[in-house]
Image 1: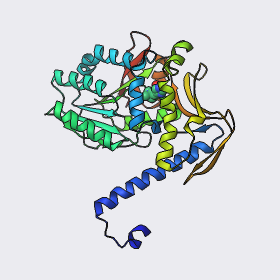
Image 2 (image 1 turned 45 degrees about the vertical axis):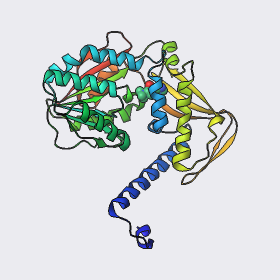
Image 3 (image 1 turned 45 degrees about the horizontal axis):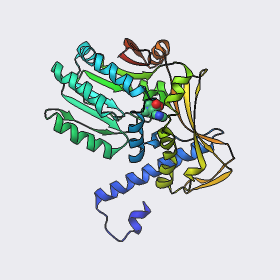
Length: 333
Ligand code: AVJ
């Protein structure tokens, strides 16, 4: 790299590695932003919602009266964690997108009570977030081995080869809904690849229901979801030095009953140009939108099909209140 040879100041190796990682991250983001904004329907990847402010806003969303998902999933976990654990007595919990402190503790608590808990492997894109989570959990569970892994699960899982089996892979929060069918299939196929015969996957999915209920969850009366949506532009501004006028976009979320999914968009309130270094100049017409998220809604047959397509078998289905479902899946040979 020219930066090394041209630099007269000695850069410690560790710092150099850290610098390159940051460069990589920005380069990857620039590529993804460029690709997304070049599409006919402009798009930005939903993983960029979650800087510190975005994570706080999401935390607030989970407490809104309209946003039923988190409460529904937590109730199912509280009800069934024990019997899920007794199914195969996992010694390791691998959590994909380890965002959910409360839900993690329900599972870890059930594993500890059953006497099988040994190892916790949280996987997340945010190194800082992971380190904080690891620190807290080591304190709360002194005998627990915590092995955090930094990875963008939409690219690769990054799970260590040697895990203490059996493993409970948990993919909660309906995050699978953010992936379209092909991407969801390949993500679950990667999980399947990491599984051995006695391991299981616990998958949380939001369920299909009347439009008004789903749309209310993504158009809350306090406007928290609108702030969360617009926060993505702040993230792109900060990380890539772009000049999005955040106030020049309005939040829009609608349910497509044919495609069984919510779409979140940012609608440009006027014609505008946005300058993004490393990407270029982007033109938006008045009323043109950037899609920031899809959130797919399932039913039992569609979950079964999705699992099957990834060589997984639906083994248990928990969905008492009809709003949200927890599925336990086993690997098919
Ligand atoms: C965390 C991805 C499951 O899709 O419902 C909440 C994110 N977006 N409100 C979802 C979200 C708008 C959420 N997931």
